[in-house]
Image 1: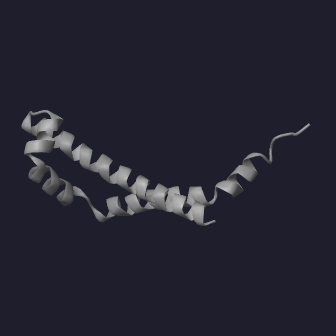
Image 2: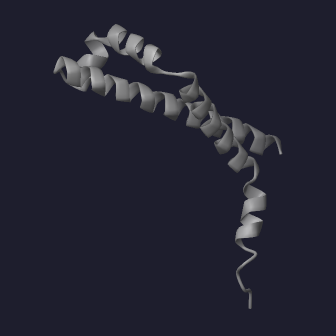
Image 3: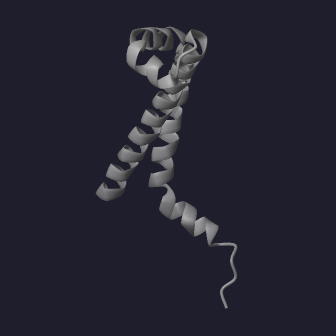
Length: 94
């Protein structure tokens, strides 16, 4: 059970980090498009603009979504034994 709990925490952290990174990268692409530079240049030379605009545009609903995705990932890891039991219930064994 401890191993599954650690895996659930790792899955939750990974899901949360992916949501935040995706949101931030979307902002990098937007700043790069507006400033007509590559995404790499926007990330390197315009980081303060990217970060400030990302912080200003991220709402409480976004954070609730990020945490919800993390909670869902953790819940699916913890519920895996039950879900696999239900998934095999419809199969015929001969």
